[in-house]
Length: 464
Ligand SMILES: [Zn+2]
Ligand SMILES: [Zn+2]
Image 1 (tube, helix red, strand yellow):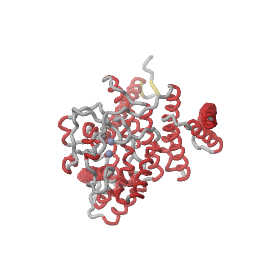
Image 2 (cartoon, rainbow, N blue to C red; image 1 turned 120 degrees about the vertical axis):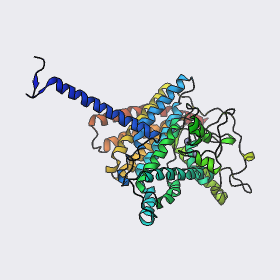
Image 3 (cartoon, rainbow, N blue to C red; image 1 turned 90 degrees about the vertical axis):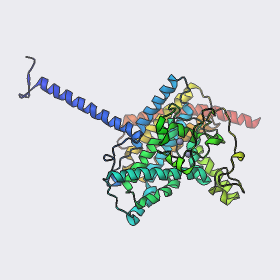
């Protein structure tokens, strides 16, 4: 008898059918949620599903999108490879992603404190009670956030002290999806004031939701693999328009500030079309030869502070401003950037492999922190954020092949081994901790041998 009765009631074939249907249903559900995730990258979302009455209910859309970022980057590299164009450089990509990790570590630490003023204004001074469940509120919020983003972004380019933060995003000489994640850790604190007028009308939950969608949309437009999107180019910010924004050619400077819509640039006179006969040179006008994320986050602020001491007004005008000149300086005084060799440091394969593995360990640590940070005390979160920043700095210094990078890396490995031995880690299996300890001990041992060599050379040179 094949068709034996199961539990004395249902035939086995019927049970198998049910299981099969459940499996198919589960797969369809997963596919559906995957497609929704892809849609969010392009602001293609259902207003009803993404409207919330309470800001605490708003999901972490941006933080949860990392798998999609990685998928998009993989697809971009495949297209570049098929087109026989240069694929990502490891050093530049790790630097871009490091900035993304540092920025989001900062967010875990601040816990959205920069939005407090928005909440306060909405609670005390709102002019209208827009029902949160109505689609019109959703659309108004989407347009309002994008309109404010245009002005935040424009101010970031036209006011020197704000540019000191935003230049981080422009510090890569590449233009790819990873660059979309290269952001300044302090920019949120400088830019929040531009969004405050929205607080008189738009409920905070909508504001937080659309800020995330707005930023998500801006990730994929960092690519050279999409040449044009036809009629969409008139309304939306596209890879073509954003390539111009990242150029350091004279015609590209201070152009195309839009986030999702390019209509703001067309309306306010800051739009520039991509020139087919002029190669775009990406990056800062004065490129910073470094892959160290901490240096790239901070060096310009130091420069602007120096300028402030000499000339107070300078920090409120454009980066190219000079006394007696218009607010943004004159084009004829600006540096004409022509084709230049990209900053690069060639490292042996083993070194790149080492840095990639250690970078992945930091990413894993970040994921763990992001998942647990609300249950941890602020001091532990702070300690973990310091670990992330120090680790990414060490990786950057090694990519730059800085003279004392190996000593710095040795100290980092030793500190981590000590921390693993001395601290308690709830919820992490002992075998994982032991493997991590062994991994950092071996790494430290290797850099100890390297450091001895480096110090010998330094001592010898000094004697000479
Ligand atoms: Zn910009
Ligand atoms: Zn950009």
